[in-house]
Image (cartoon, rainbow, N blue to C red; front, side, top):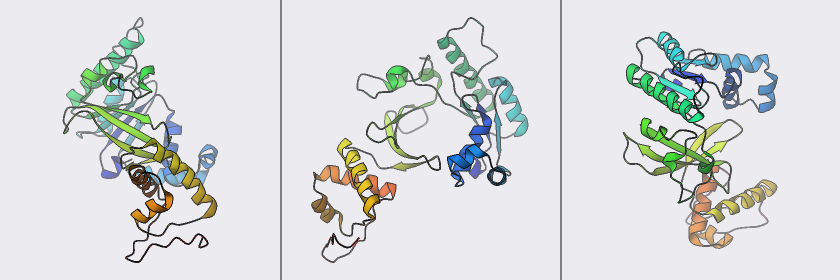
Length: 278
């Protein structure tokens, strides 16, 4: 959606998810809930269609191959450099696959086919990958380079590799590590995103350093929702009011401000927290 709204053509080769279900992602972004998406109302379908009508997007699924999908995308957007999105590396198919190949060989062959498309057509090619079992848990002993399932060649073929994990204390937060990036500033960087399930969007948030801040966040957020309270005062005064060590407190504020559940009014006046003023 980010690319097509900038006028960048996108060719999506989707195998893991049905194309019709994939279109429903835009319905949630346009304000329809999941029940409405399942019902496929005429109003919803017309709104999604109107939104995507003038966008440079083509979505393909089975029975296409990587090679045939690339030909169709090239015909759809002649002479243009596009973004080709593939979902997923283990499920799409190249014409180079043989019947007796192992899962590792299939993933490697598909990765090599995508690399060929990228080089020959000068496109940006993006592929999702299933994660190896050991890659689900982040640990010092595990190298993110080897997170891709059934293919050690991903780390050699890809120009950039991103590994996405859910935060163990807050399932709405995703930590994205970047173990490899050939045309960037440096490898081994990372950033955080918050996933909104209501509209299927992601926003970048500040680093989450403290697990205890995550737990406090849920406890306090629930308290806010039940009582509809609002804190008024400075960060330092808030720290005094809630308690906890200073590092955890500032982690907590960053999380809550990003989520929009905590609002501050800054003033030179002395901080007053009136517990009876709801």
